[in-house]
Image (cartoon, rainbow, N blue to C red; front, top):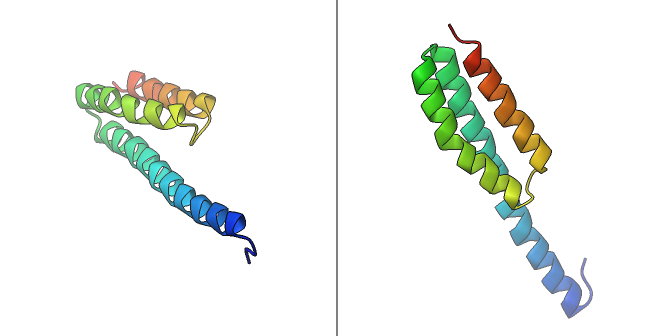
Length: 87
């Protein structure tokens, strides 16, 4: 338990930051799932458009350092690779 005013404030700030980060990570996972769903449908054109729409979401979250930039880049690369493999 926080004993000083400073520690109480830091605890409040940490909780607010944790909630914000959790929300952003959730939106990242949702963005990836949307592209995977489009890939699963087998429509290459729709999957490509969905990836283009979700890339900005992925990059924005990486810019805020919620996930590492290499993690975001790896996710985008794997999604693009899966789209490229579609017939």
